[in-house]
Length: 524
Ligand code: GLC
Image 1 (cartoon, rainbow, N blue to C red):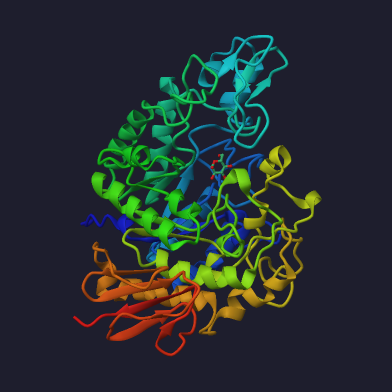
Image 2: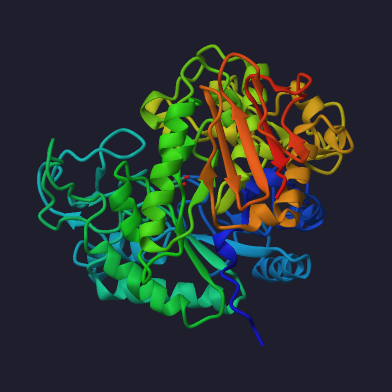
C-alpha cells in the first residue's frame, strides 16, 4: 500500500543540470551514465529528490529547453532505458525524481513545427502563433533580447518568447492541451515523482496580440486562463499517488504568485522573491514573512531557493556590493569578494535549510562554486549571451569532482575538454578535496541536511521570530530549535540554549560573528 506522504512539502530537492553534472562517456558533456555513477554523492548529501533539467532530444539551441521529442532522451545524455534505470536506481537510494516539462514552446525541430513550416496552409500552423503581414504583429521582445517574431520564407511571422528555435505553442488549441496531458501521463507512468513546469506563467497569450501596455493587463504574462490548464494537470496528477507539480513562476506580485498554488492547482513553485532578495536583515525578514503569509493562505508549502541554472551563483551575488539578483542587471564583471560571498553563502545555507517548507539546492552550491565570469566569449554557449550580452554559462560550468586540474574528474581520463571551461582555482572545491574537511561547504551541507531530518524542531511546521540584536534574524522551529543569522557588522550574543548544533563559521567565544548563522537546540 502506498502512503500519501506529501513529500514535496519539506523535501530537499537537488537540481541536476545534466550537461554539467558528470560525464560518463568522455565527450566532455555530462550524461545519464555520469549521473548514475555519481548517485552516491546525492545519497551522501542526503537529498530527498532530484529535479532533472531537460534531458530530451534537442538541437540544444537553449541547452535542451528547446525540446524536439518529450518522450525520449537526447543521445548526448543516453537512452530511455538509461533514464528508466536511473529512476529506479534513484528510488532504490531513497531519492525521488522530478522531470522538467517545457510547455510554453517546442524546438523548431519538433515534428509539429517542421510540419507547420512545410506549407503556409499546413494545419499545424494553428498549434503555434503564425500571423501574416508585412510587419511583425507587434513589438513584443524575446526574453533573451531581440524581437519575439521571426518571419518565414513564405512571409508569415511566428512568435517565440525565447529564441527563434523555440516557437511558442498556441494553448488555445485543444490538441496542444491533449498532447501535454499525454506527456505528463507518459512520465508519471515511467515512475517519476514530479514535474517542474518551465515558464509556467507564460502559456496563454491575448489572441488580439496587443502591445505590452505600460500599465494594465499583460498580454502574455500570467493570464487568468492559465489556471484552468493547471487545474486539469492537477486532476491528472491526482490520479497517481504522491506526484508533485512544481511551477517556475516569476511574478513580482506575491498574491498573484500564490494563485498558482491554490489547492486544486500546483503543489509548489520556486520562491524567486527569496532568491533575488538582498543580503539584508529587514528585506529578508519581510520576504520570509510575505512568503509564509501568502503560502499559508492557500495551504501550500513555501520553497527556499538560492540559485539555479539561470541566475548568478549566490557566492558571487553575496560577494558584491549590491547583493540582489535580476536579469536586467546581472552585474557581470563588477567587483566581487569571494571570501565574503562564501561566508554569506554558508550562512544562507543554514537559513534556507531551516525555514519551514522545501529547500532547493542547485548542483555545485553544496561545493560553494562561484560564477565563472571569465569564460572567453568564443566559448560561451548561452543564446541569452548572444542576444543580450548577459549570459548564464557562468553558473553552468561542469562540476569539479576530484584531482588538481581540469576536468577535475568530471569526465573519464583521456576525454574531450568539458563543454565549458572550469576555473583552475576549483581544485580546492572538488568533492574529493572537501570530503572529510569539517570546515568545507560540502560537509556543512551534509551535516545540515542530516540534522534537518534528525532534529524534531526542524520537522515542525511552526516558525516564530525571536527578539534579537539589530541586524540579525532569529527564529524558532517548534519548541526545541532556533536559528540565528547575524547580518550586522558586529558580533552578537546568542539566545539561551541547551547546545549548539551547527555553525556556518567559527564562533567568537559565545558571540556570533558577522555573516554567520548558527543552529541551536533550546531547553524545553
Ligand atoms: C526557463 C528555464 C530557462 C530557459 C527558459 C526557456 O526560464 O529555466 O533555462 O532558457 O525557460 O525555456
